[in-house]
Image (cartoon, rainbow, N blue to C red; front, side, top):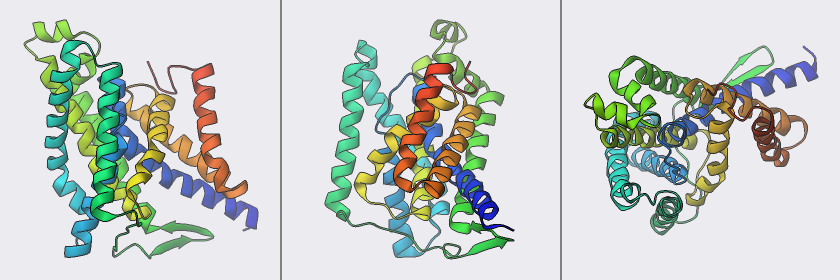
Amino acid sequence: MELSTALVLNAIIAGLLLGGLYAAMSVGISISFGMLDVVNIAHPAFIILGSYIAYIVNDRLGFDPILVSVVLSPLFFALGMALYRIYYLCFEKRGQESLRGLAFFFGILFITEVALVLIFGVDYRLVQTAYGQTTWRLGAVDFPLRLVVPFLVSVTMVVSVQLFLTHTFFGRAVLAVAQDQLALRLMGVNPVRVKELAFALSIATAGVAGAFLIVIQPVQPSIGREFIGLAFAVCVLGGMGSIWGTLLGAFVLGLAESFTSTFFGPSWAPAVSFGLLLATLAFKPSGLLGR
């Protein structure tokens, strides 16, 4: 196999595996921003919080970080319920969710980051896993398990969320809550309760995504800010409120960054990714799979 062909194949695989991480990071934004109209810019803070919780348990008890995140996801779900209740009572109920609500989530982002700095410092933290140093090779193509395992669990999580939203009564209520709350009330459904539980689900996915992140790369408290634009970019690129679109948009951005990093250098990757976002907004504002 020629070197150029092997390079292209490895770039494709790396891009798809990276896209799995981006999908896990962005599915919560697709729910909160795309379906609930809640602009939760603090979403990456909960991803980093999930990374640090996975790190603590892995460092002290040796448990796999991804398993830890799944087991502890109900805690993030409860945190999301409490956070939305505060947001609703203080801002949404009063019709002040636009600017003041945005400032509220920015404050949550800042407080979480400062708290993590005070507790853990600014040093990078990483985890040890049984598969972290293992790479499968198929011909000239490498499959590092530190990317493969998070990819498989990420895709499973995203597909599970999609099936839950489309095949359950609650899921259909979530899809309808941003469109016609009056109709939901006539059916005996409390839209606020629906939004509270859906927002909690988005925070739970962020906690799990944090474990994927720290398996793939070391983290430090301020790294979450790097993923704010990326998560929203995936959401908009795929189509607002479309889970399948989020998955597709994540793969597109992952491939774009992988090819750019491989052939032009890593510093160009963010520019190409956001260039794709701008092109989508210009030529297909609804996104790849948007309604």
